[in-house]
Length: 241
Image (cartoon, rainbow, N blue to C red; front, side, top):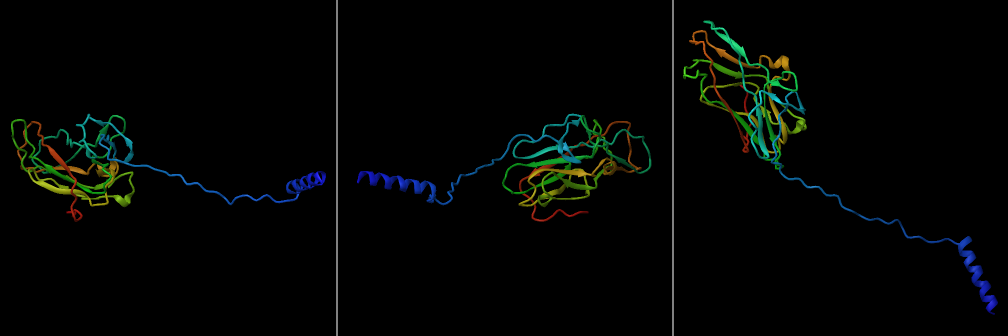
């Protein structure tokens, strides 16, 4: 009897191994998580090339530092109209192109960066604080700066581009109003407001008109231009003159 039981057991195991099928569980799954979070960045944003915003540059001469915070005004070109001959006829002078220590001369521009992560929007305005004057406060009467060929550029997708005024005439002592407006949902990242899109078009984009009747002394005349960045965008697009 024990011999028969042993033989039956052996035959059963042999059948399972050689001829029977072994059942497995259905496909198994296991879920894991991915995570990333962002926060506002307060670190300064260095100037970038106005014709290639992916490339950092070093403006020459060394500029004033940009403003701090996640919404920052990083850089603005100064306008140098050179040394000119005294004349009694109306004249138009053009600002020198923005110079860099590590790049060829390029267009004059202003740079704004929004790293708040709020899609709140912003606006940029400009004002020539006073007339061109000598160190002795002698005024260059009637001299007027006009910015032309204004446009925005960025490595950020163009769907988020702010709107910009193509032409701006500066009136000494008067706010010239909003020149770039990033409504809510626009203007994230670094944006260039440039005058011309290359050296050729930028060469005559920033001009100074001086009337022939204006008395001109053999002295240097200077003025200051203030750019103001605000976190409250306009509700409408700035009009072009």
